[in-house]
Length: 135
Image 1 (cartoon, one colour):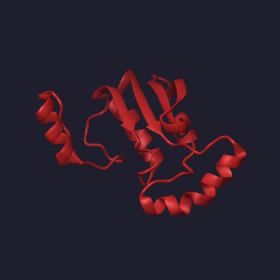
Image 2 (spheres, one colour):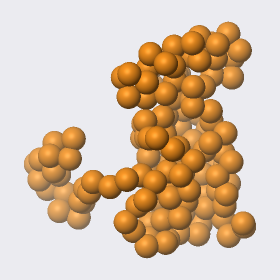
Image 3 (cartoon, one colour):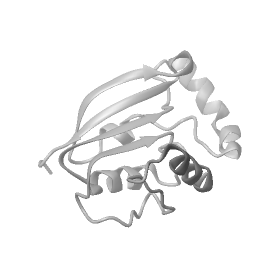
Image 4 (cartoon, one colour):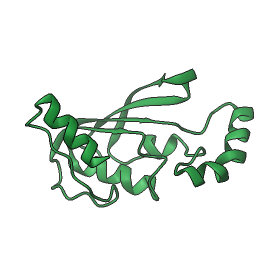
């Protein structure tokens, strides 16, 4: 994925953009490094989603925004039961169908701005958060 991203960056002439390989739970950036953090399709594929969210919060400056696009466990009890039942199978594909939205919403120092259903059949959610000064 990194080599494809580098090729695309070069093809589009995005000389101000770079990519790096690192652990989502241990980002190699100082606190408050970014005005915005974008995490598409990350939360359900990392071993510890809470640590990944804590790291995104850490590297985002106060007043900055974090956008997460991910599949989260449905709030519909019937659909949630199906997702939980299929989760062991989905893990073989590299993601968890049963990741709760609360992992994103309950990250300290992040205030929810909005959520909205996106993508195919609304099975993915865009969650926009703002980093606050509150502990």
